[in-house]
Image (tube, rainbow, N blue to C red; front, top):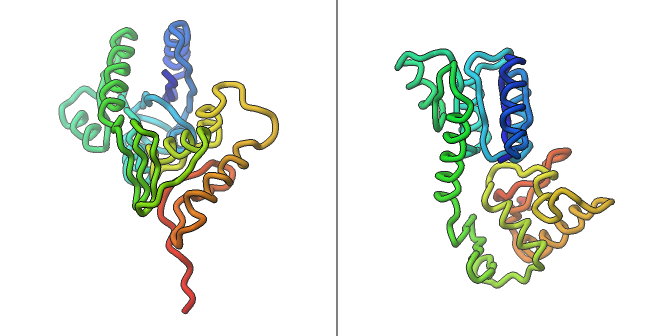
Length: 230
């Protein structure tokens, strides 16, 4: 799993890194809420480990922004010393998927994260993706817009699937490059070329555009209304 740890306790972060990296997981860390929210919105993670009490923005506020403004459904487990029922209810209402009180056992945290990931993936792995008038059948690999078949190369289908699954959230450039080339992307800006070809097929013939560029971050799939000529 690729995990984001948002926690200001350096000793706890070090323990999490030592445990999870030894088991083949990849971790990033943020020491405060604002940095953590930025990473969560601009990078792709399988799950997020979130502390409640954080500098600059606390865990529940970060989670509400992530869910409501970022439209992210990333699995989130909150870690906190708050063990009263009202606190737990606040965490769940903010958008947490699970809640683990400190102190905790690392193997239990790992099992909970794996369970969350499996549940989210099972819920999201529909065989047909739809966004506006764009449709992708994952079984037949057929893609259409407004009933018109689109002819995409394999790279274009991979990019479009990633964008459709995340829509309307932004997918970072690094994540899209991993979708195409794993951990060894080619030199030069090949991603831009593939996005150009995808745009030409998906948006070119249609008045409303779907593929948006988010400067210095990545791309997202969301409706762009045609320009007014009044």
